[in-house]
Image (tube, rainbow, N blue to C red):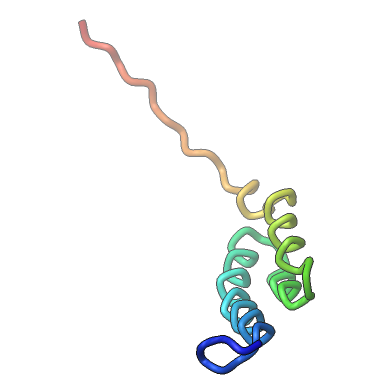
Length: 78
């Protein structure tokens, strides 16, 4: 069955996956993981689930290396 613009549902899924790769590539790169993992989106049925699971459960090397800012204690004036 074709939808309104004349392409099948498979083409719609492919367009979504192509549009999702670039933002996922940038996210993986910023957190210090291999950006090529974003290409797993193209695996039918479980690709996006695997990508989201990796982002949710993996350690983010770049985030872990950043030191926490030191906050000075405030003086309470009474």
